[in-house]
Image 1 (tube, helix red, strand yellow):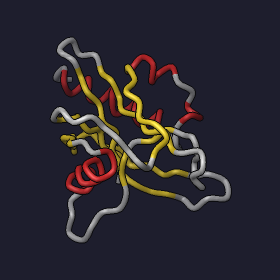
Image 2 (cartoon, one colour; image 1 turned 90 degrees about the vertical axis):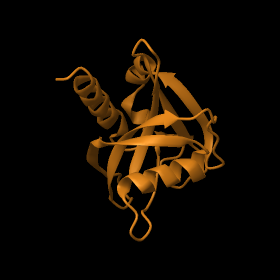
Image 3 (cartoon, one colour; image 1 turned 180 degrees about the vertical axis):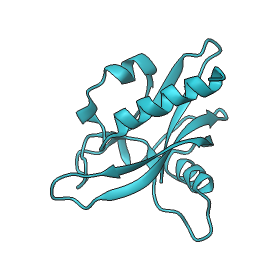
Length: 142
């Protein structure tokens, strides 16, 4: 399971937290991703996503469990990676940091939408656009 973190200001402008994989990673070097991994025994999806953000990026998130999608990452010569992705809202004042990534970037939604899809792991960009669009519809009551 995985999550992507966002913040939203009082005017509804969204910024997304993108983690750039180190260039020396075997799978998907230099591509952007969110945060996640495997669940522990008897852990819920939400608990697992929160734990991974706390231990890997040093921040707390609220997992919007109703805003999720299933995914499969398929790359030639690599194993298929199935999972479930959640949209997460950052909570608290901690600043993200990660020893597992070459950089962490907060990007405006408009900047994110302009980035090339091949800069992301698997179908992450398309999946996030769908989740953000669903978030806006739910927030607006539609």
